[in-house]
Image (cartoon, rainbow, N blue to C red):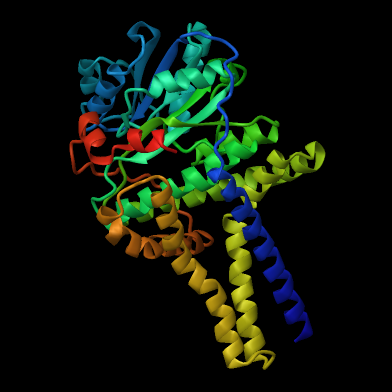
Length: 421
């Protein structure tokens, strides 16, 4: 059993070093960094792009929130891509004040294809925009979003992720799980890396891209997680992404477990596609460029599914050693608990820290906090399932409440919270 012991010890060291690195980086979120100086002073011209598939119930609220921005209304246009719609999305968007492009393509239905189709037209037109934003149709946008993103553009940032908050965090333990997950990622992943000079990642919605960045090739993505893919390609080329804590967008999350399972399964499959496509390139970039940013990007891609697989192998090794009498029953229990306890208790502890640091009310989220280990544990099950069965079918999120920007502001007061971070 000596070889099992060697394997187990090697896996313990690899996993321990990986998580110690993550903890050390996360601590940098506690450091207040001086704001970057402006390179130019200019009110830039933007386009807000909203890919939408059968979203007549919510797209009007998003357009309304964009029309109420504290920014010169002559300097931004709102575009809705009505993508393979069979409802009144296009009509509702036009009536709300958006410019609507209708697209029909039964073979290429994902958000990435819709973005590329639209942006290719704007590139050919040589449209007079400095940058664009991408939103999901169920979003609501803070009134200062464009103003704060314009500041980032003036600071020389090319690609910037905004703060993605949740507009329905208390609807169910599922929406609470999403909220806690994003709050934790925003502080301990994105903000920490931005403070340290590493690269955050795009997060699906509420991000800005300088128009010139995509003019050579358009929105060239092939995976189900086009945001992560775009981010990784930037990192491979040695280019950092920016982070804007004060550019806030509110996102609606599924209330039920079935929809959440389907959505997170697609995300996991998208991550697997990125692992297949970009792990080698990230490793080569880390070796050749010898920068912490490239190394951190490589750790990101191996930190999801590959690290999960290593942990499963470690647990299996413990059981093999026990079966072969290389480990006592007590030693087996202790070794298994070393990984199960952090898996189910540390998420609650981490979530409480984030909520205290961000001065978020704890009481409305107590049920969500208690159920958070279940939410994250179900994600581990999803990861395991996707190793063998990979679902790619998109399932529409049912919108159970008609939430407008005024409702979100009163309920979450995120703007006030962010000002204190």
